[in-house]
Length: 161
Image 1 (cartoon, helix red, strand yellow):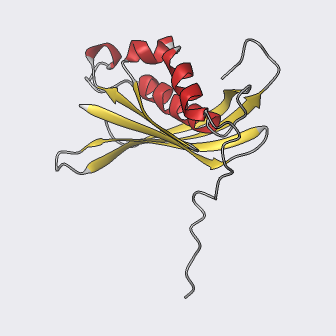
Image 2 (image 1 turned 90 degrees about the horizontal axis):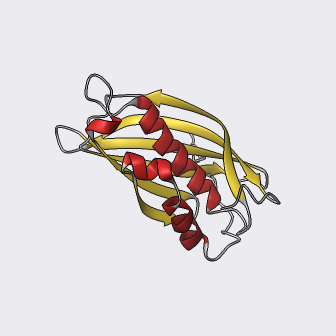
């Protein structure tokens, strides 16, 4: 049997904007939604972004788990900023589609939400998101996965960074 190539994440182009990390951090700081949820931007790298979300009563559903909509918002944001790291400085990124799979109750106490570019394109980019928490045994437990399609927007003053 032959070895199969690891095609999960193809090699990515270098970021066209050398200041991509600062641009992403400044843009994230403008997000009222992420501030409301209590999400924190932790890591910004070419094609990858990590955001943490602490469990809190104001983002929970009736069973005490983090609400799926709140988790989806953070994973979508992580994927959007992962795509943004590979865009020109004057470009904005908007999600045009995403699909989420909820794998386990999001209990926390801290959720880690990573967005990672799967395929970078000039106009359309595909990114995958993964959310995990520390399980009862101390090992990471997957909570959700998300697949997003994102569009590069240029030439619009209302959609930047």
